[in-house]
Length: 162
Image (cartoon, rainbow, N blue to C red; front, side):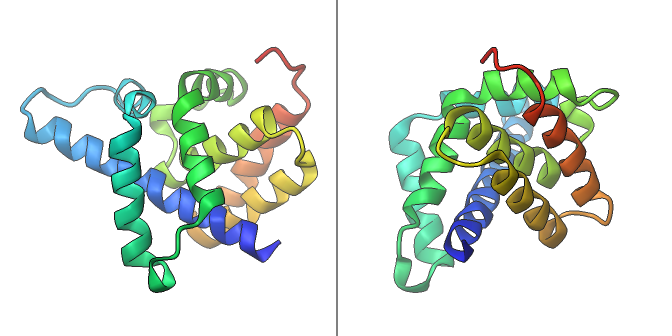
């Protein structure tokens, strides 16, 4: 399971970097700062070539001998491909919390776990939730594990409509 956790951590790091790059680009373009939900939803429009180039640079810089983490890349691609559905689902179950108000780390941990819960049917929900909480414990704030667990518990108990 450690390999999968490392993949989830790599996916979190890539999603975080992509989101930060997009926010910087919006600011540099002088187009003004859009709402975070609208801005990061553009991850869904990241073209495959740009994503491949970004991932190659990430793995070269942060992984031993530039080894490609196939599962991390699969998670990032999956989140990007299904981002509007994932964000809509998360917004519907995270009562009192708009996606824009969530910490960037928490939001992306939730996106990865939501992708796994909704689109990777071979994974047991309890495993996905536990892994997300552990990643939140490592990368998030003190309250992050409880927050992530609460949102994912609601998602795991939500009837499937996606």
